[in-house]
Length: 86
Image 1 (cartoon, helix red, strand yellow):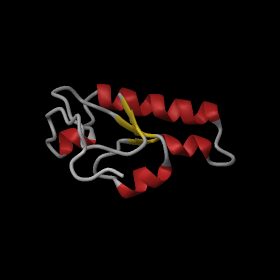
Image 2: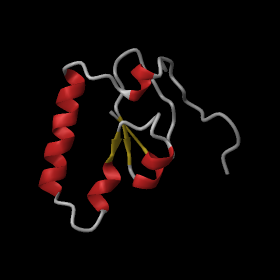
Image 3: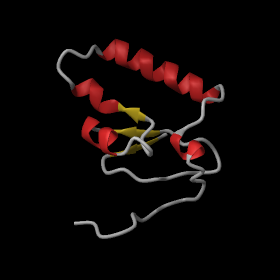
Image 4: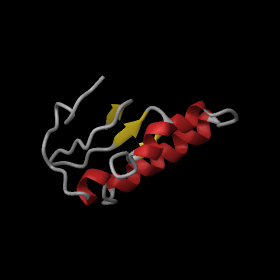
């Protein structure tokens, strides 16, 4: 699992679950982000339900559901973001 607030097409040889810390990022980078944790911060979101849904997602990945980096075939380590960062 990899948490991110800016997003990156990070991929390792093993499945890498990228967890967005905000929904805006998840909406802008759906090809990179596997799970939107920003939903927990939205008003009215039940933390227990959110935790249960996230756990179910992780079990699905452990059972063979492909992550975004696997679907896109990003299997190299990307330490630095390409382009200018302000």
